[in-house]
Length: 241
Length: 342
Image 1: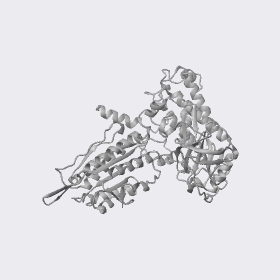
Image 2: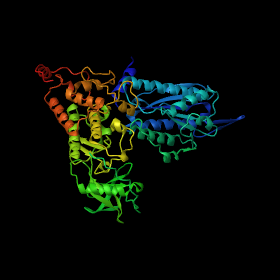
Image 3: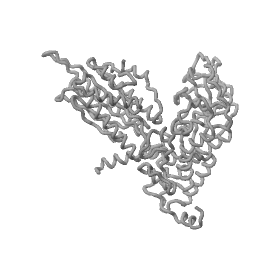
Image 4: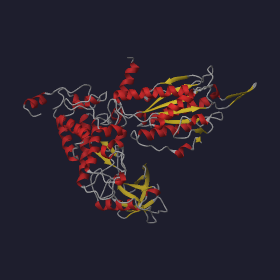
């Protein structure tokens, strides 16, 4: 085993805190550049959505690292997608990780939500098995799905059925977030039978991730299986139905 | 304990003012009291430091019920005075004269869950600690629990966020207004500290028994000695609630083992416990045979004595918070065994 794997294994068994596995599934398709083409003219939004997303992620990691309980509980994995999906970061002890900086997938167009969500489910299930194999308690995993577009394939049809089933069995929490005007909220809704998807106000990624880290913190102070009411008041700072 | 029906929730008390930092409030015992500094906020109200050196809890408007007033009045009358227990010692009224909260001794320290339930936190806050300190902490905690039980108070919601640690010899019990007292039930609780037979119950609808409390006590002692690890986590485990209801306890007693003990240091820690401690946990979590608070206190004093006298591992491994191997048989244990004592 490599040193990294040994360390990862040590962390897993030495830390008694129940784990909250979180998979961020983030759209990195070219439209996140904020560049809009109208025939021959190009309009560029300022700041670029991808930059705001990255600074939100950085803030998310840093807030969790500063939280006395959440830093030992939250484990974050990242899937970036466009037409294809890629694991950018695997679950690990958050103390050792620098927040990744996502790059746009300019060469690979498309938005395959289903492929990305399937990968996320696979990664979350794998991590859950690792917890069970060594005897570590864990919370219902979280899947945060952020996209700004319409899917360019049909992969979401099957994966939304799979995800809805997990949600209804209380084996997964889904947070679907739409970005911008082009997003298809009905598709996001198909992944989330219990709560409605929310639309990010403008580019309030930082506000969203700040809210998310508070929710992680509240959950990590509870005991797996307890209902933790979401901070609905706080949602108003970044989201809308 | 008899099971009289619990008192009703009671009506809301209308208070036009909810005092805040900088305001004066009135205590029948201490006169005019100023709310100096905001300390913390919970689900029911805010805690302030006062100019009298006490702490005051001011309830949120929607938590001010006549039921709460009657319970607190009884608690104040009972005047329980145990070092470190932040028992209500005076009712608190607004300047307009309506009931808004209560006054108590001020607590110090950090919540147990936030300063010792992960090995790196112990290293940060109590770098000099070894296992003797953990056992001493259990003793200090149990002494207070036993004292409360002698006064017929049941804590109910035993919760590592409500015990503040200054050191292994100094612990503060906060949020005492939720304790089960007279025929007022403790309305709250968490999954990990709830006995299997009352999992999922509505805590405000019944009075907890001593036996329910003893389950929670065994759980907290386990989590002090195995810093942060819950008794029921095991290989192939499910949710904490399912684990508790199924009662699958994975640490072995002699030949009895389901081979599901979690990986990591936990099995070594267990191996180093004195036999009687193992037996007490095993019977509590496997067979629902629970020791009382005073039995646990005696047991922890015996454990401390065994550590002080080096009766456990001959190479001192038992003294470590996280031993790296199983316990070796000490000369002392071998002699005892040969003499047929254990």
